[in-house]
Length: 333
Ligand code: TRP
Image (cartoon, rainbow, N blue to C red):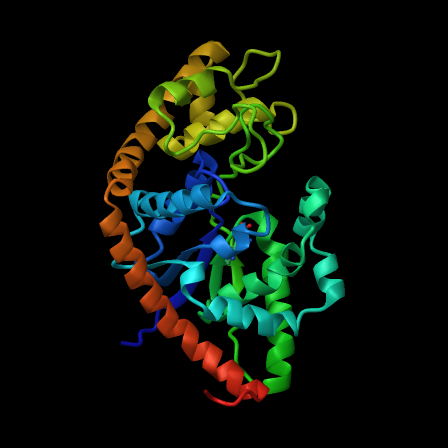
């Protein structure tokens, strides 16, 4: 059945464990979108291999990530949840689009520059053409909106440029997507390096809280969180990045405003504050962790979900791919 809902697509790489930052910044919002939008959420394993992955770990993380999507409230009946490599159209359209993406454009991608600077011994061609594959992920589903963090805006812009270039030659094949930056864009920073985004794959100095961390681990991470030499709980990201980040986390978990939080902790020290932030995070993540662990143990359920998801996704993706193949002059097989 066709419907009039707009389409949303987003994806996360299974390149590391899912973090509190991913939950508050992305998954929590995604879970609420399916009422209004036709949603596709994917686990982009093909993107993950642009960095070397341990095969057993990758398999484990991919399944675990699927379980965590569901545990965060993304209902597999109302959303299409799938693993990118299960839908060959991504690789197929990715190749085609790489022929409509310019070397110069790819060279300007800041994520490519960052990642190649950090990983000089493995600057592979896939890392370079990654945005063409990401464009395929999005354009295959004719997505209207792509929920992403700020760091991905440039890739969405490139996706639009490639789509415009392709449509300019062949007619209206692709819908032009827009980034969808959530209103309450909780951007969670690393607890030890609060000027850097909390990221699974990059920093590992104990500043990252994982969705599957035990309550003890979570409390420990918050007790050790970096703050500053003052003692007042006050929101000031420039001067007090650590405390402001903790306030952001507390606010995202309790829906309290920054000024309410300032009042609540007026006259109290950082010790009390960190304890309270740790406690609300433990309670926020408890049901997610329990459900995720239950699902990870139920492999046959996860298999059913990803098989169904791949089928649903492929049906949409192949419609677009067939159209593209015809337009560019490939003979229908
Ligand atoms: N590039 C994204 C990231 O690193 C992941 C991604 C791949 C993605 N394909 C996508 C995000 C399609 C949104 C839509 O975070």
